[in-house]
Length: 113
Length: 119
Picture 1: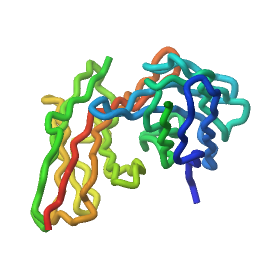
Picture 2: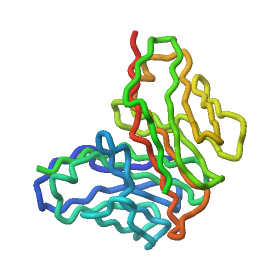
Picture 3: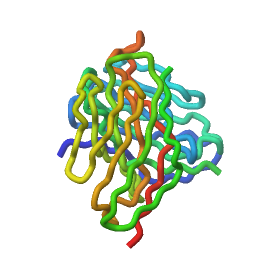
Picture 4: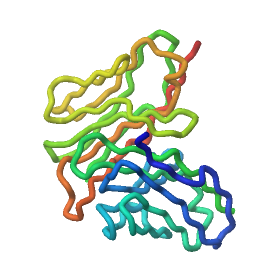
C-alpha cells in the first residue's frame, strides 16, 4: 500500500529534550515536506526537500532541523523543543511535477511541557 | 505570495441535504492546481477532489463537486446527500504549477471550515 508513515502518533516531552519525528514514504517520491497545524492557522510549511541531500526552509523553520540522507526518509528534528512547538505535525510527499497534491502521513501530536 | 481564504469557520448541514463550502484564493499565476482536503477526527488528511486551473470543466467525485470560477478566483466545494461520515474539517489548498526558484511547490492552505452533519 502506498503510504507515508510517521512515528510516533503522540509524543509528550519536556522543554529542551531533543526529539526526532520519523517520516518514511514508499512511493519513490522526490518531494517531501513537513507541516505544522495549529488551530485557526491552518497548515504551515516548516521544511521541504526536493531530493536526497536537498533541503530548504519553508515558512516557519525556526527551532527545527531536517535531513534527507535517503530518498524515502525525511525526519524532523527538534534540538531543544519549547512549548510554542506544541502542535500537530504532518509529513507529506509527492512526485515533483505532478498535480496530485500531497500524500500525508497520519500526523504526530506533540506536546512540549 | 499566494493566499487561500475560507470565510466560514464552521458550517452545519442536515443529513441527506446539500452544503457548499466556500474558498477564494489570490494569485497572479495562470497555471495552478486547487484541492479540497478532508480531516476527520482521526486527523488523517484525505484528498477529496482536485482541479487543474487550465480545465474549465468542474471536477466531480461521487457526491463531491466543485464550482471553479477562475476569473473570480473562487473554488467552492459542494457536498450532496450529506452523510454523518462527512463531518470533518475541510481545507482548501493551492499549489502552483510553476516551481519557485528554490524548486519548492508548497501546498498553501486555508484555515479550514469545520462541517457538522446533523442526523
